[in-house]
Image 1 (cartoon, rainbow, N blue to C red):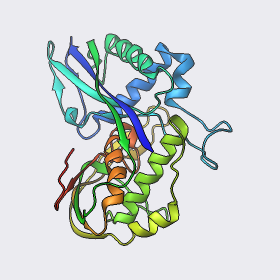
Image 2: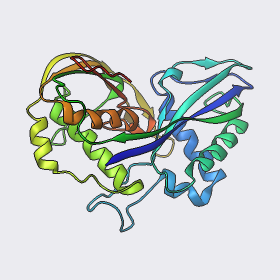
Image 3: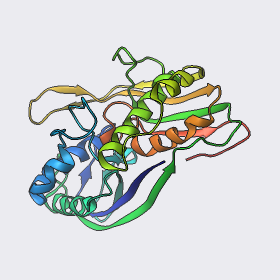
Length: 283
């Protein structure tokens, strides 16, 4: 059983000055991409940007997760001058259809008409496949009892009561990662996870949060449609866990690519896991 995706990098050269807002480059890219995709590939727009259950997919799922996430936190607060190169990443989870060609058409259109409040133009120089990723979801290496998880971008996790958690308890972190991976796999890949969700969740509850060094980031976005203001923040930093962790490592590795928690599509919830005892692996 594996989780598969493709990771791409879009390379641009700025014609004009292009400004990316602090803490929300991925969010504005998502918005720009949606508008450009509707123009460049209107037939594919709904499937890629506004997927709906339409009688298929996991039972009871009203809103499908989009089949992609942006990786653009390095652009937060950056202004790109004319002639300067810049890039951002896109991880795509739907490998059954030629989705990336529509991304390329949309970003080529967007670059030509201008990005951001300055409407700065750019040239799409190319798209490279950074990685074709296949994460085995079987148990990881034996004897792992301590790991460190870095929350690289603002992360919001909901617990069993659907309330946002103050601390990333492992059962909540793992549960949100497992559920997201299973849903993406069911909708766009080989099918839902073939595991006992309850029992693996109970085992995750035995893992302890032993250290938490987190900072809360506050950011907002204003909807161009409704004018409403929505929070974009969450916590960033490092948490350390102890327990029998081997079977959970593959899910955390997959979550590095998918993100975990709310608003993953524009880059929130990006994590990286480092094993802190005998076995060592870092993304």
